[in-house]
Image 1: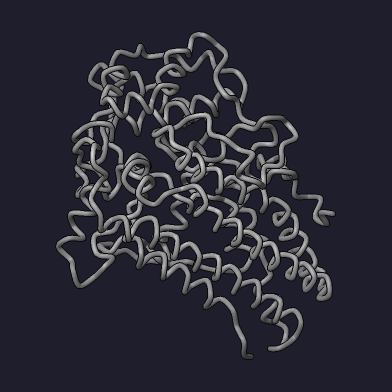
Image 2: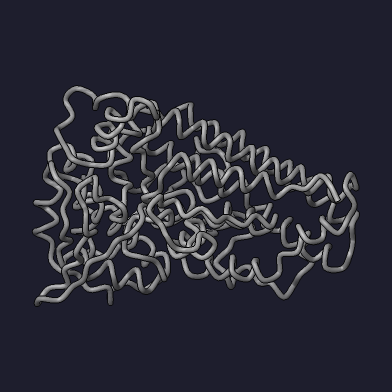
Length: 428
């Protein structure tokens, strides 16, 4: 039972059952025939990408008005469609495209403004609003029960990659209430209750780690790295992949502007960031080796909140204001039940990030040493340029590896993991 009634989760678009996933399954398609041109191309997107016809058909699209969008699920579906069309257009040719046509740029900016999101393929577009189930009462915590409604490759590997993350979101939903209850218990100095809730939180984190490792079941590293990952890339820090200036969003009639956005990233998961805030983990890593600004003010993790739906972002801001667990745990002596429970939870979050680093090694570092499968058309993208850069850094297996969000990948992940574990304290 939530002990802090002043926190209304509906206000933040958080579901008691599904957490940051919608309370009802997202729309499979926009029923209004006006938007059928978008739906038709996205439905055939894997074929267009294979045949290099995505840009050709997108260039023929009319500029559709967003005034026909009515409900919030419709706005979200439009966001998914336009995100996939955008990244297919940018990365779907021999060279990346620096200009996004008005047929995509105009409605995408309108939809993004409504949802308080940037006009690019975010975690919300790829994961939160891009799943389907066989029935309304389906268990969302099992990725076998989930399917995608939009795809770049049409492969099971892509679907599994996204649906494992969605299952983690659903499995982590009960932990949102546990965190809020623990914060309230600490505020009223109920040490026994805090310890119980931290133990529950710790168990939940371990369960999420086990679920994360189901990724290996149906997602092949070479398929992910060479076929899917290039389309997840953003336009920020992508000079080596052919986008030195980002992408120009052409609004027609001589209007428009250049933008640089990070690509889709699990760092945009509000659930994972909520765990950090709850435990008092403060990340300073910028993810950018060239950054000269103060890390504490330029944290990549902090910046990823701009890629979350507005209500979710405001929930994290609220959680930051009320979070008191680390301070409360540190007020107890070393080896006390509360301190031990807190440290165990922190180390479990660190272990979750260890699993993620091992997964990145298997899905990115190792495939980056291999050439694209035979038969794939020559392209300049995040995969091909990374593989090329790595071939020139034989002494450092991770040189030249950048995340889809533009980070210096392995150093960033290791620093994030180390910062997490350092939050624990075993001495007074």
